[in-house]
Length: 520
Ligand SMILES: Cc1ncc(COP(=O)(O)O)c(C=O)c1O
Image (cartoon, rainbow, N blue to C red; front, side, top):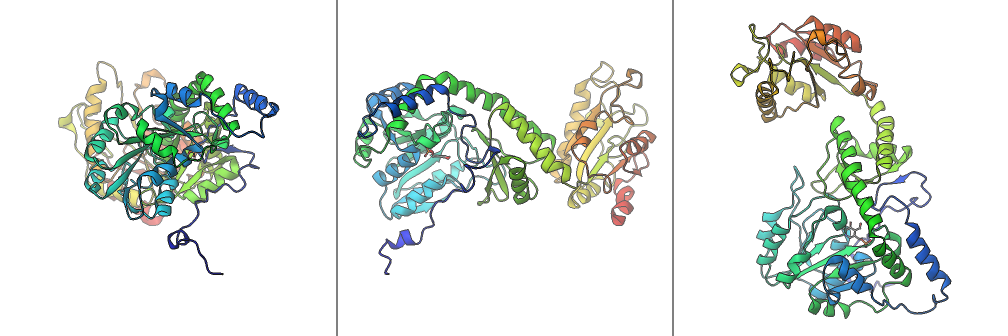
């Protein structure tokens, strides 16, 4: 058979999200950024009423839904068009405003539908990349890429899968430069980020926004979203949309969801204010790199992401693999309720951290890494700070060999008038800055601020500071070590059951650890 489909369609791959096995999965679905709680009973009742109404054979009629959405979004009724999910909104915007050969700018990596729509039409796609280090929006590159050929600029705000937000001020600058192009802002996660370009619509004719009921409102299976734009553009886009593309089940559930906004707001608050910080703290505590996100998901970069995804899935939490340019080897986890994220953390610890062989270097600070003054013993001013010989080279070698660096130090009376916090912090921060400039970061820093008479359980050689940390990293003993210049360091190593590397006070750190490293 001769394939009569357009050549450019034949060249495309279908957008096939990894849905297989999801509906039968018994664990938590944290892979599609959906709402993680079931639909409220008010919406279920509205749907049941519709099913029993004996009107399912009748074509849809949308009554005042646009008005209700307009009130919610703070715009006028004729500035709203409802769509079959915001996916349809994206498709209609591309088809209404860009032709074959027109240039569209899609900051990347981003949501798959943008590329699908552009490829179907046959657009020239320019993809400025989100910044590799922090996944910041490529603002300057977008401005530079903009010219008379540009027909559409996509600003996914916040962006999926990076979580990056763009300020309204920066969107305005793009709009000001894009005089003859549409600036299309995807606000699928608006309820979580609370950032919106809606106020700009009054000032600029060329902004179009899509939003959805699929995320914070939890109606993903019902497929309803909406477009916000100038009245004139809504009128154009209505010529492209079909008259019945949104079904009546979606209609009734959207009406009920808007009536029960409190429930949505309560969910969003729990996700953003309570559950997300829990996951961030967990990633911080275990030195798992992640990116700041303004939405209900976090992109993180564990070691061996393929294995982590598999083990999390087996343990009861599905996450989504992301392996695109500048976000190589990352996973994306959707944030749900506090209870769900506590469960996610438990699964992560049990399935991954307990089974990961880790190498830890527990390093004393004063007299080992930095000069210990023989009069005051404590570094209480910037003047006294001196990095010891062999420290930079030694730490760099440890990093190269895959060691996690843990600083553990007794700082007698820290925070009291004899040793105020400020006097400690300035040299400590400077020291960390110097290390950072050499590519050295500490994975954990533990400081005991007590004096011997306090009888605390965290002053070396006691292990109170690290007990909780060590409970989660079972298989660390063989390759880990403590290095320090005091007997308390030796005893601390004994107490946690690992090798001790002695060091002469203010000696050469690299020399001290060399023979241990060559023998392991
Ligand atoms: C950025 C972004 N835009 C749009 C959508 C599509 O949402 P809808 O379910 O409304 O089609 C998604 C869904 O994941 C998304 O992440």
